Each structure stands twice: as C-alpha cells, then as structure tokens.
Image 1 (cartoon, rainbow, N blue to C red):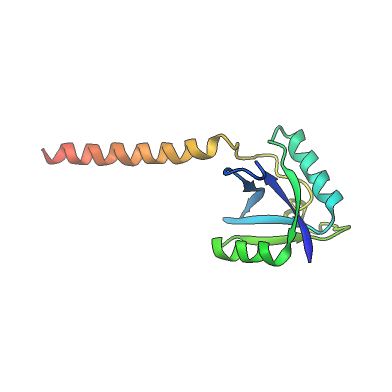
Image 2: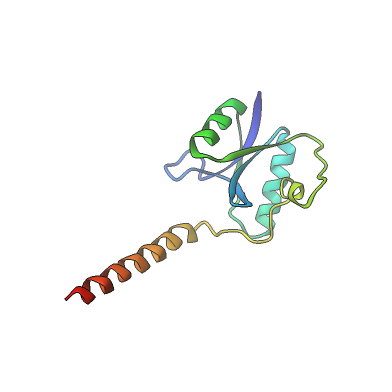
Length: 126
C-alpha cells in the first residue's frame, strides 16, 4: 500500500522525515491521502516551520524503518476525525516545534557540559 510522508531536504544527504514527539515516543506521520499530507505541510509552514515535500512511499518500507529506529508509525486515514487531544496532533501540528537548525546545537550544548565536567574533575585530581 502506498502512503505519503513529509520529507525535508528530499533527495539530499540531509534528508529527514517529519515526526512528532508524544509521551516520549517519536512518531512518524504517514498519510493515506495526498491532500491531507499537503494540508498538514501548509499548517507547518504557517507556523514558520520549514516546508517539507510530500513523497509517496510503500507503507511496509516505512514500518521497517520505524521498527529499526524504535519509532512509531501512525497512519492518518482519509477523512480521519480526531477523538482525543492526541488524535488532533495527527491532523494539526503542535504549537511548539523544534527548529531544524537547533538540533545540532542541542547536541553540542550537551557535549560542552560533559567536556567541562570532565575537565573540572581532572583538575581536581591535580
């Protein structure tokens, strides 16, 4: 079965798939209907998020990808109607997004803290 995903930097070495974080889990949204995926892209853009492209892919391929990375795959069916607040995230992005440019910076900040801690501990040994 072919579905639609939202890709950033499609066809490049920095290609990435749109995901959301929910209760500590990374969730990859896949859409049954291309129009729903395109609408979701528009909502992301309205929140000043980088605009992804809609790409068609086989559902089994995405499921395998998610399994390997311990992600969850959520299918947004055509004419999906949310029943809970969590379901609403499947048709409308959350208000707070992690900026693409910040991903690497967050990792670097953590590394700097670890390096400084190690340095301080070594100085204490002298």
